[in-house]
Image (cartoon, rainbow, N blue to C red; front, side, top):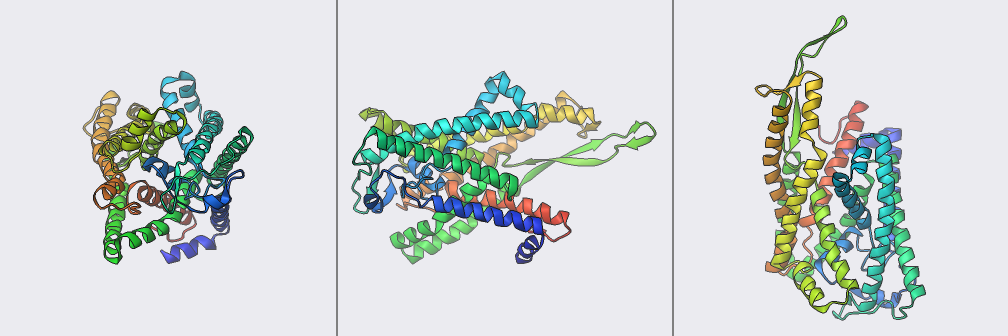
Length: 428
């Protein structure tokens, strides 16, 4: 592993990509500590936590920037939410579906509209956060609600909304820069950096709450969870494919055999992020709509991580989005048509419709254990909170799934770059 890192820095262009990625991450973390203008900074320094588990997800994805009232307090959540909306609309709007089939030009159009939607959502969410800061949605060390915007004037609210929206747009630009000029997927890398930045503080909080014995036990459990995630993420069902021999002109093509790798967890960590984004909306609504009975129900059931309603709803959404995203990203009919076009077939299965049905049959069944595993790991923090009264469980749920998943994908990209230059990689 260490020799692979040394080899990566030996290649000039790969070294530049790695250093550029680290530089952008450093800027992102710097912006997570610069406070928003127009708030009571003295009161903000006494903040300790965010009321409500779903708002805690926003704090997690922003790397703690929410409790510090930084310019990057919204994190990457508006972009994730807008991406979800665009993918959902692509299923029902023919124009968006046509753009998806246009290749690179269509992807650019969808990306542009995703940016516009991200800014719009950032304005809405920053407005909701402004009311949250004013109404006392955050608490200090004594557990008392605090008002971070004592002078709640339209001009000051507009300044806060403008700053938070600009921060979100800057994060979106950072992510695109990493994708084009750095290593890995930019948005995933930024989420990874934000989550990893919170892990030491959460581990220290467990040590203070439960002592060294419980901390060692949770650490050992975390290692086992990471091992299980790696096994599931790497697990796949290989579908054998045989290509018939073809004569084109005076040359003979085909006759080779290969396979289609169908992963057990085809959707990766996307279902976790999608489910978290959906659960964030009720928390946002409760800060804006002054309906006491609705707000009380959302606070006690949807936002409360220890609530059975939250646990069941969160798990169901993860399973649903696992199937939904898998259906969007892998089209059995299109794969079967491409195989038939180039003379490929699955041994024992007729080309065309029968092949598509066979692929769909297998994919539907292997997605079930993958989605159940995702849901089980994701609700671990809620179970730990309900049974052990552990407020911050660092080795479960969204955080550990995203960090392990992003680390594996980034290592695979570095692996391919090193193998192209005849160096030993991380996984070989």
